Length: 295
Ligand code: NAP
Image (tube, rainbow, N blue to C red; front, side):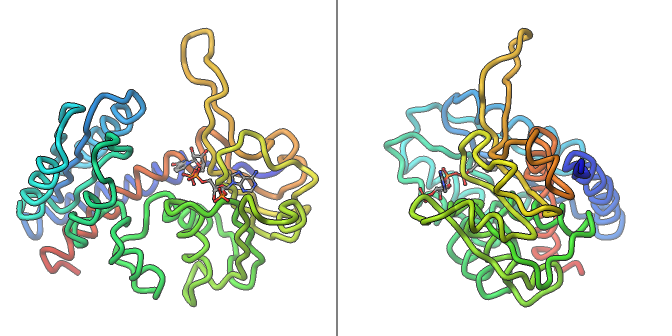
């Protein structure tokens, strides 16, 4: 068997085209332009690249975009003051603080200071709580992207056995929660495994849908996968550099083995990755609609 490749890149492109139309319509009908502010502290190269790409995407879609770059020695107090200002800025519908923050800044205090109505990353406890009770305004972006890949690829989740590998607050826990909801595109039976799980391969092998977010390159082997399962590989691991100086990436699944067993699989790169920024844009447009009472 050779699995079908689920291209997050293509699905992201499709969603962005829909969003661009929606944004143009909001401007024409309501004179509303969704606004995203990104806050970057310091010059961590990966963070600079993520934030630049988020701003570029929002501008391309016709949104108002503000990129606020602060020096690495910015105090917690100054950062909280900036968040307060952005919370009260009517041009801004979504605030994204790029993580990680410098060690001297209390990350949780900063994230909690964001108005939950502008928390387009979906990390504020108010939004996490809403997600758990099935009333989310903003789903966290990577899990929301996984959900869209499943829906738009026609993967049936209702009644499916899902195994999620990894229990982080940004991927594992939220995707497990999202897929167990009594809702369209969910209704799955979910198992979540982690480093204290006794037999990870046995749990993986039972899954109709296997979602892996462990941060361990090529961790999941072909013989851990149920024949015909759908595999979503969230991992992005740098394994070296190419001759041209680009990062070599590997997922958390041994792709060459998995592709022979699964019925469908997301590649790395080009799978879940491109969906994350796209879902940030979806959340920002949704925030603008809520702020301006647009259906
Ligand atoms: P994380 O915070 O490091 O969490 C990793 C989770 O995996 C932990 O719960 C850990 O268990 C579990 N784990 C680690 N090794 C394991 C093993 N050998 N067996 C079973 N469970 C194991 O990572 P994360 O932020 O969720 O990210 C996971 C991966 O996804 C990374 O490669 C990251 O780069 C990637 N990622 C990609 C995107 C994207 O947009 N594509 C977004 C976010 C993350 P314990 O809790 O027991 O330690």
